[in-house]
Amino acid sequence: MKKNRSNLGKRAVALVAGIAAIGMALAGCGAGSSSSSSTADSTTETISVNNVEPAANLLPGNTDDMAGWKVVTQLFEGLVTFSDKGELVYADAKSITPNSDASQYTVVLRDGLQFSDGEKITANTYAKAWSFAANAANGQLGASIFSTIKGYDELQKSGVDKNAQLSGVKVVDDKTLQVTLNAPDSSFPYKVGDVAFLPIAESAYSDIDAYGEKPIGNGPYVLDSWKHDQSITLKPNSKYTGPRKVKNGGINFVLYTDVQTAYADVESGNLDVIDSIPSSALKTYRDDDSLQTFNQAGPGFKSFTIPQKLAHFQGEEGRLRRAAISRAVNRESIISKVLYGTATKATDFLAPTIAGYSKDLKGSNVLDYNTKTAQELWAQANKISPWSGTFRIAYSTDSGNRELVEGITNSIKNTLNIDAQPYILPTQKELSSAIHDRTINAAFLQGMQSDYPYPEGYLMQAYDSASADGKGLNNGDYKSSAFDKFIDDAARQTDESKAIDYYHQAEEQLFADLPVIPLWYANVTAAAGKSVHNVGFNYMGVPKYYALTK
Image 1 (cartoon, rainbow, N blue to C red):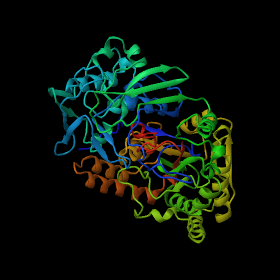
Image 2: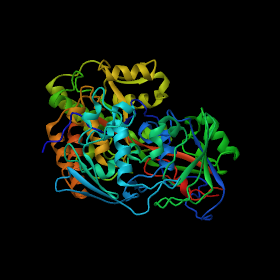
Image 3: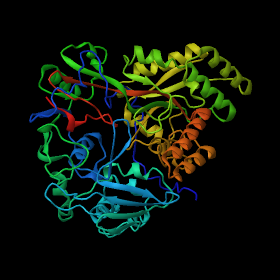
Image 4: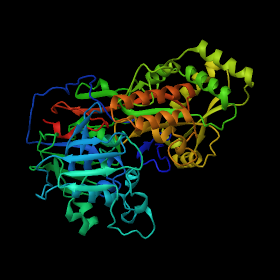
């Protein structure tokens, strides 16, 4: 059965030009760190952490930013959650079982599930919440994640009843859901870990706006207060029985407008944990003996895209030139000198916290800096058509990426002896518009981070043929029937290891074609006060709030 690509149903984060080191994920330590210590197994203390004001309310289906995600995922629990390494862990679900071709799933819930107000959670709770989030009449930002479920298209029609339900979600009994998809999708058990798949209480439907301001959830915490632009305070949920056992007296999200201020607060002891170090401190923060410091590869994949339509980058000539350019980039040097060691050299098109991440795929040696090989590949391309012009990589003045792009272009220029230069646009908005309108006429920085830790989340929208031409995140307009087939074959597998085998073959095709040039994985850079214990970070690079103690 051919996979339907008309609506890919994936919410990935496309970090166009956002290549600078950003705080996302870790479980390691640097100077002065003692984060793995379990000196305090539990505490009644509230732990203060940094955040910014969420972009919208605290409604799962309407959460489309990391600030909101951090809070909503503490107030709610879904069918599944994930380990620090991206492994699937059942939460509200007892089992999620596919049929023979992964086009239909049977979901069985655990016993005794309830919201913090005592309302019972049943299969109907989930069916109704998913349909609400998917229904266009309700205007939820996360609606597209449901597009692989049968009946989604009907809920997108003009004039649809806001109470209309997904026809592909059938309530069998109080504990059982049967979910029918538009096409096989082996990633579904991971996809239901997306924030939009979280359940909401019955009280939400009578006043959804009020519920979004003070939601009743089923997660490890309940909302104590939300002082807009100041703080969001959470307290433990006594009715929670899921896998994230709370060890503290609550979490206080201090809402900052400037990460520099947050960093100053953690240095002075006025903040317990910061999950993103400002660029101004990246060079020195690990030398601060008064703090626990962290720096480890996270879930953010960074690359630059060479559009398929650029002159000299079509066909065999383009394949050779892409490989030459990849070999000409001294990633280790740039990571050391520009990013101060806060990134990890890429070895695939995923990330270290994602299921299927690999360091030894066929063709991955194209990511190794080798001047001789780069020059030989470039010379082979010149035999097809002599090079002319300037190779440019675009970035915006307000992105903070000047030194980084200069490092990449200088490495290419010095290795290949060609004119390679940064291409500067005034603002990120103008750069994004030029990329999306296909008027950029240059390579450009890009990145990817999925909402759930599975290869499909990184590969489908970024490189699938149907996501080209402005229909997804395939901003270079790469099209490969071979790649598409590997993705289709992966989607039909009910055995995860077999699915990952196909995803690896898809990645090996990407190494042969290089629609993007992988660079590195952005490390999470973070710090905590010395009195804080059990500091760790999850698959999304966010602190494991429930485990923090002091």
